[in-house]
Image 1 (cartoon, rainbow, N blue to C red):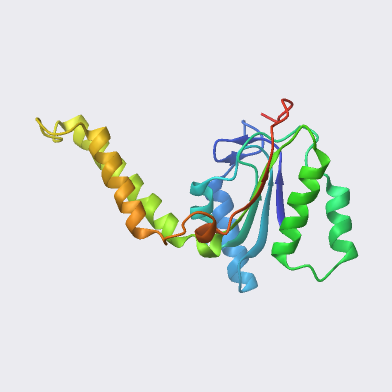
Image 2 (cartoon, rainbow, N blue to C red):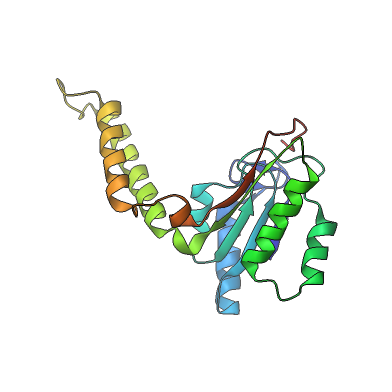
Length: 198
């Protein structure tokens, strides 16, 4: 397990003057996975807003599970003592069980004010990642077409036409029970505290 703690700056971590970028993190984790012969079990992001599809897609193949928040994270951080107690009391925890222990202890620490923490299983994300990549490419093409005036005239506005086509493409490519079945999402959610890290 690797835990990134601190501020998230878009897709960067650390201090604004010298951040670690998501691309740098990906390079390091690829090398680590190659040396180890398998992906990192858990990437923990003890930072705000890092449960993102883009990060999951980038790290797929180098990381099995990401535990991160979709929202702000309290300045007081994860409750490391009960999290470490959970693994020391049961050393044979699987990575998923350890991820659940992180989520459960984190959410218990901030009850009743509430927080949000998610565990993404990247081994099940390929259909979503492919659909998001296709969506990104279609959006880039649409922007380029608009700039060059190639979108045509007399047709339905690009935004409506693009949304309908995108939704249809995503629906046709994802399993019937997309979402939790695809990424194996586990989350605990409740109203958020105001004292977030960013």
